[in-house]
Image (cartoon, rainbow, N blue to C red; front, side, top):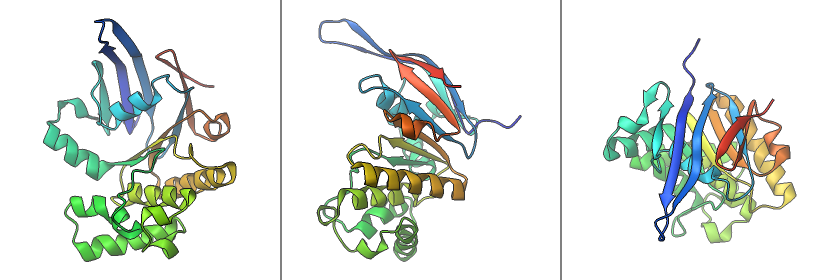
Amino acid sequence: MNTPALRVSDISKHYVTGEAERLDVLKGITMEVAAGEICTILGASGTGKSTLLHIIGTLDKPSSGEVMLDGRAIGSLSDKELARYRNENIGFVFQFHHLLPEFSALENVAMPALIAGVAQDVALSNAKKILERVRVDHRKDARPAQLSGGEQQRVAVARALINQPKLILADEPSGNLDEENAEALHELFWEVARERNQTCVIVTHDKRIAEQADTRYTLSDGTLTQDA
């Protein structure tokens, strides 16, 4: 049996409040996602979906438990190693696109490649190709404030893809879009992920989106269950 692209083993996360009370956000989360699969995590706001995604993506650390990506325990990496691993292997798409306002769409998409040490002309050329793939290359010179919400999220998807990551993590990627743009974004997301055989984990509160995935989980009260 092949090693899963992602394995989360008994992950827990808690915080201590100002009153020295313990708040358990995640309670013994275990899940697996095979290479090339699209996985969704369904749950209401405030259930810990974003916290779990941040731990998987190495943006946060669990209180206990282990995350393995392609058989590698990422908790054993130093902060410097984690930053490099994250930039080269994980693509993020957030609900709020987090594009850099002073740069064009093309420059925003190229940024992770430039950080990874790719030559500027190559990074910009690759960024243009990906913008074409997500059908927003005609807006490559526009800054984020000049783009519609749907265009901004397409640029964010392109940026997540620039380094050809093994794993794409998306946190309510269409949460700020109207129904028509949300549907178009998810169709595109699915299409590109299938085409590139990329592993995706998408957190959402939308049951319609969740039902389209290969593997589906529901997060409630800090515990995760796999859907049939």
